[in-house]
Length: 203
Ligand code: T5A
Image (cartoon, rainbow, N blue to C red; front, side, top):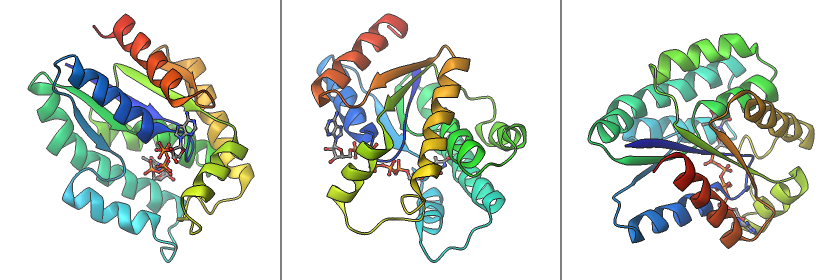
């Protein structure tokens, strides 16, 4: 049993890494579960759609509470049962994203944001977190290459994304569970570095 989260700014390669780690674990005979935030449950997916919609004029605290409503549902409906069954769970984003985006990015009081996240996560903390780090220029060119239409968060200015990236670096300094991976390296190199960290810390 292990709870592993993957963090980083937009287009940093989290989903690509998650797929790579999933494949490596399955090849080793494991049966991991993969999910994501916001979303991962029917109710959470509906909240994700509201959260990302450009038409949603969300107040930053409403945004924080919405993300954490989705999280509370995911913890109760998916994460706890899977971990309780002894599975390895990989989650694309978790509490660190809320601290980085709503705390550092939006500028909300970080302690109050953390208190809300604590209610939603209900004591669940990752065993290992991969922070896939890329610069904002790389992030923006990857997001643009994928689609010409940005969602509500991708639409924020570069200074916002710099603050979010800085927030992830600050969290990595504070928490030993966070492993910083160079997301500018090749996909194969990022996956290999993650698997080395997994074997050293989880097995
Ligand atoms: N959010 C979320 C908050 O504000 N607060 C919160 O609490 C939470 C939980 C949705 C949004 O929600 C916000 C943050 C987000 O804005 P999301 O669905 O995770 O979160 O959205 P994104 O971060 O935008 O996810 P992306 O799919 O855009 O990015 P990924 O998963 O990091 O990147 P990925 O793997 O899809 O790769 C992007 C492109 O880069 C290439 C891939 O092939 C792909 O084309 N790529 C690489 N290219 C070269 N070298 C590598 N190493 C590469 N890795 C990937």
